[in-house]
Picture 1 (tube, rainbow, N blue to C red):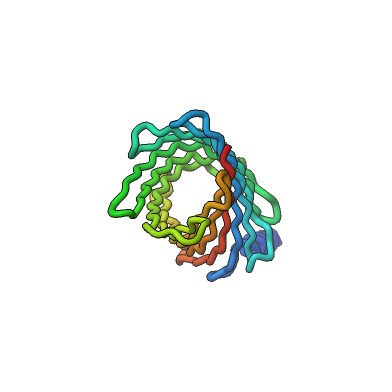
Picture 2 (picture 1 turned 120 degrees about the horizontal axis):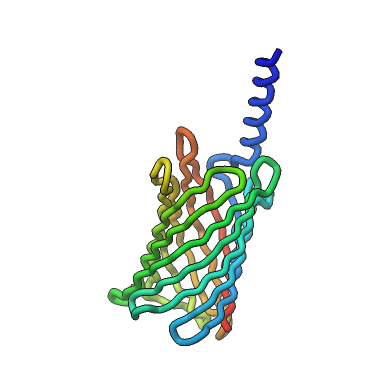
Length: 218
């Protein structure tokens, strides 16, 4: 009887877990809003919030709130630190993650193409599982063309995720392409498509993301 009860519990947990493991090829919508304050010519403080809808954009499952400060150490080098608080839907409840981080970005131009190579190191603390570290590398290339009075500028990007501690492994890749634009002097917008590949037990799963970003600078 005890074995039967244990089997029932395991099956219920598995069913509940897969309820929020969206199908391979899921369509999602992500929205990011940023408020940026320029302290001086080299220093900026940024506040960011992001919201995500999965299961063919029908279920709200993720939000984060982020505060960070960045400094232009050199013309080609930007460094920063920050803190991100994340709430993600797991087993019918929003679980919390606390993540301080450090960032170093290399910037350069090549025949009108603008490159940014961002290196980000995160410490991830959870109340419901073991803490972990993560390294993220994102390469963004802005193309040397602008269109209309909004200065619409296309770009492409690719970001890789590497877990640190325990089993060090490459477990996520995000390839994106989109358009940045100047809506007003102090407001910038961004519309993009991103293909997210995440390693799950035994295989990789794809997610198609339509995203928007809005940044207000003061």
